[in-house]
Image 1 (tube, rainbow, N blue to C red):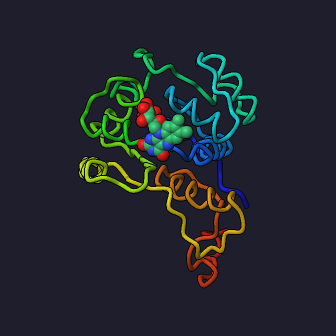
Image 2: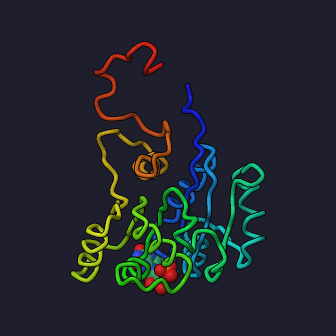
Length: 216
Ligand SMILES: Cc1cc2nc3c(=O)[nH]c(=O)nc-3n(C[C@H](O)[C@H](O)[C@H](O)COP(=O)(O)O)c2cc1C
């Protein structure tokens, strides 16, 4: 049986790191799970989306909302796309934040800006709000190798309450395709956003018999 639809509101930001298939699959899964999604993306994310996924993300939020709602079969009122300087957006304030936020993929630039508390655009501000309001903030940083600056920024953010979730797959699920590897990472992000999914088998689940009436 599929999990019950979620009623959660999730902010998803796409930034200009490699790994756009993770971000787009996450968007797909959030909408498929019934979440309301506030979507943000940076100009560099537009370049990466085109390079890695042949996807042209429109500069105009309204146009992007229409295009992505159609692409992912979102229900009316399920997907909202906000511009990077839209300071009137709900997620700009601690009085109306989303339930949780993911930045996937997360560039070292955006990571550093959040670690420094810059809040200079709506992605950085929304992340800043999540930290100050003690709500889940999941960062999927991508770079290799990592400098001590990257590592220190990640440590700082982890101490402030963020979940640092690099897109590092496990191979114990025996992935057979790139899609399987993407789903492995997206599944862990969904877990940390408290959005139910059935993307991958969980470790050890075959050894535990279902409890009637509980694990139905
Ligand atoms: C195709 C492409 C791939 C990139 N990959 C990465 C990456 O994996 N990690 C990273 O930190 N920056 C990467 N960059 C550089 C960032 O996009 C750049 O630093 C940008 O200023 C980040 O801006 P943003 O954080 O506002 O998206 C990449 C850029 C391009 C065009």
